[in-house]
Length: 170
Image 1 (cartoon, rainbow, N blue to C red):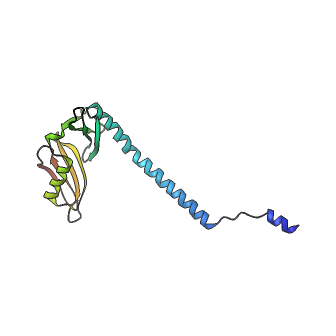
Image 2: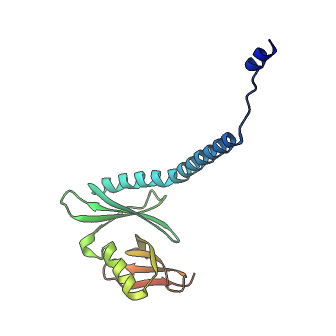
Image 3: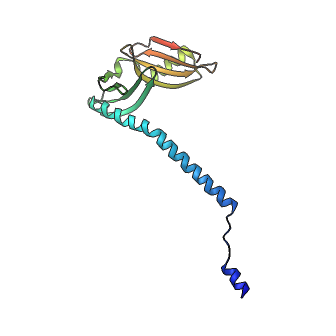
């Protein structure tokens, strides 16, 4: 009789491997949630400014760029209904700011700017290239890592590739 009772009164033991697996699952879920919450504002901004660009004439979006210096500018590059490549530059958080619409044929493309930066500064790595407004004129903001591992920024005029501003060795 005693033996049968022991069978039915078997105690559940928590194994260390189950605890480790549970903790790892919780950590993975927490990391995923943190990334989703952290990226939500960026996704929201992208949707908001792409909608503004579509109201400004873009029918097909090719790229969404962000320039963050003293002011934040969002730019959307794509095609209009005439199949012309255009860009729309918008100032972040300024409802009075009218979007600036550019024909990409009137200036340098992103790839041309990357090539220009490679020729002029020989960077190890180009981090970002984005359209912005510099003193009211369209320009490209480029951030890159130079040969001495220093962060640098160059502002290049959209129309002719002239260097407008250079910040090195940050």
